[in-house]
Image (cartoon, rainbow, N blue to C red; front, side, top):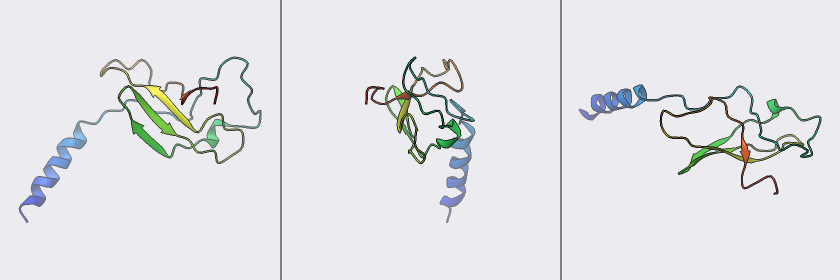
Length: 99
């Protein structure tokens, strides 16, 4: 019973140290010039359903609910702490656009 106050205190301390690293209203993809795209596709049709933190990248799962989605697994480079270049970087395909 005495562990509950300790648990709540630790949860409070851990949540106070969170910071926003990246955020998006709509995803933007780093599509190469001349790459074939679907004109009917909208970025509002790509919800993210998963996130995995890798050693040097953050991976996002973007299921293809609608036809024309350019990718289903994307990544962004993971920068050094305090050195984030932009808040909403363009998503890169994993493993590449060739797939």
